[in-house]
Length: 276
Ligand code: C2E
Ligand code: CA
Ligand code: CA
Ligand code: CA
Image (cartoon, rainbow, N blue to C red; front, side, top):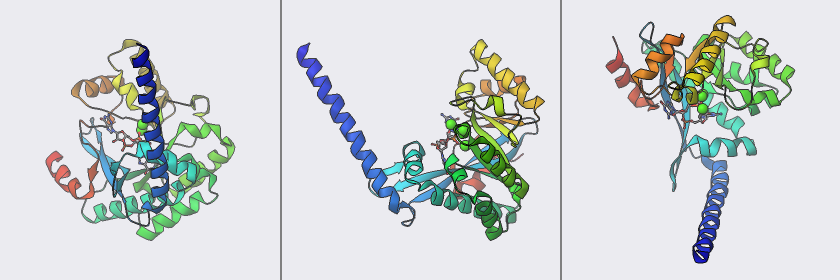
């Protein structure tokens, strides 16, 4: 038993060492990833089950590392937030998404695109200007752009954030609260936040069988209705999810059931297959 314990200690420290090495390597390589064109965007459809129609796409960033292969955003977004690289990365992602959305328009796809906005972007004074410039550059109508923010912003100067959110909405873009109900709670601020929609985190969707969790989801949906916020469920993977969510009054959904994040080139095929 003693020997095993020792081995386990060795195993864990080696594992931790490897993780640290990987993290340091990613941090170093991330500096060059943007200029070396190693990022690309995948798009995931959002579906309205009431109207049975496509209502938008979310842009999700990917990093094709030359040696490590595809690295998940879960691994590098946090690093990018720490180093500040998140700002130029987001500008790049916004440009890609707006360019793509403009192209869809010309091809008859009318749906908006949404882009994830780290709270770090709000520490940049010129967020409104940044977004306006990207819209101008691609001549995209503002209502076709949605920005997804997270509740972690409650940790910052909330009056400043509210002012900046108002600035964004004055441009005509939509704002939604991502991962709602996880992490920091923004519930006490919800009536003050100038936002258009709540995105129910996929943890809720996964817990729909649980009656007490379902009560919480039900309450969130009713609150969203009362505050005149749209609601969209994430992580919808099967028909049971769809039935339960629709019964609770949530009709807009995103998840593997409808489509996984896709490359630009795959979108048209997906649209053709899902047309009615
Ligand atoms: P998120 O914004 O909550 O994005 C949804 C994540 O759930 C995506 O993971 C998506 O692939 C995954 N997903 C979608 N449907 C399902 C499903 O039915 N089941 C399951 N199990 N998962 C599903 P992804 O692409 O790995 O992104 C992870 C997170 O990384 C995102 O979470 C977002 O917070 C962040 N992220 C991604 N792209 C960007 C970006 O351009 N900027 C910023 N700031 N963050 C980003
Ligand atoms: Ca999101
Ligand atoms: Ca989310
Ligand atoms: Ca999430």
